[in-house]
Length: 367
Image (cartoon, rainbow, N blue to C red; front, top):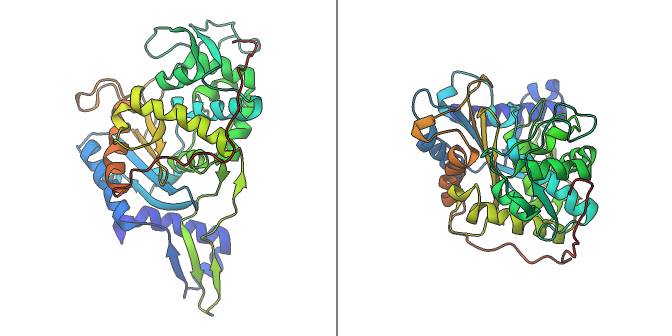
C-alpha cells in the first residue's frame, strides 16, 4: 500500500474535489482506480535503473491510456520517499522544448501549416528582434544554426530559434489556448518565451502526458482520471471512468504532427527513446539543465518522464557521467526502459487518419 502512497493521495484529493471532504470521510466507500500495478512496478524499476543512486536527481513518470484518459501509472523516484510531495502530479516545472508541440499544433490547426512545406530561417535571435520584448534573446543549445529549414526538421533537432519565430507568427495567445485545450491546466502567461518552454509557473508530468495523449488520440482531449467508479455505503455508484471527450483538432492534423514527432525518436534529439516500434515524442531541456523531459507515445500509451532536483535551482551538469542534463540523455532512457515493457509486445503503427490533412506552406512575418 505505502509504495503507492502518492497515487492514493492523488485519488483521495480527487474524491475530495468531486464529492466533498465530509462525504468521503464518512467512509464506506469502495473506490475503483485506473492504476495498472504491473505498469506501476515497471515505471518504478525504469526510474531506479537510471536514477537510483544516492545524490541522483528525482524523477517522475505518468502514463495515460489515450483512448479513455485513464492514468495507468504514476510513479516518482523512491529517493524522495521522505516527502509526501507527489512529483508526478504536483510539481510545476519548466518543460523546455517539450512545449514546442503546442506551437506546432497551433500552426497546423489555426493556420493549416504543413510542417514539411513551411520553412523558417534558423539563426541567433539577438535582443530587439521581437517588438515589445526588447531583452528576448534566443539561441540554440548547440549555438550552431541551420539556415532555412522546415518546421519538421526544426522539431526533430529542437531548434529554439525557429520555434520562437513560429510562436511569434502564430501568436503566443493561440499557443496558450492550444495548450489549454489539449490538457494543460496550470496557469500560462501567453508570452513569447512559453513557446520554447520558458514557463513562469511550470506544468506537471501528468499534464504533459494528458496533453500529448490528445495528439495520440486523433485530436480528442479526454481529461485524465484516476478513478473508474465509486460505490457509496448506501449502494449508489458514480461512474467516473468515461470522461467526456472534446475534439481539439482533426485526426489528420494529429497525424501530421505524429509524423514529425516520430522523427524525434528515429533521427533527432530523442533517439535514446527508440524502442523499435512506432512511437512519437519530444525531448525537453531547460537552459540551465534544471529539468529534463521526454514526453512521447505509442498508439496505446502516452507517457511523460521528468528528471530534476527538487529545489528547482540545482543544475544537472553531469549526472552519472552523462554530461549536461538534456532530456534526450536523462529522461529518454527512462521512457525507453519503461515503454519497452509497458507496451507488452504491442508494436502496431498509428491508424491512418479518416480526414487526411491537406496543409500548405505557412508564411509568417518572421519566416
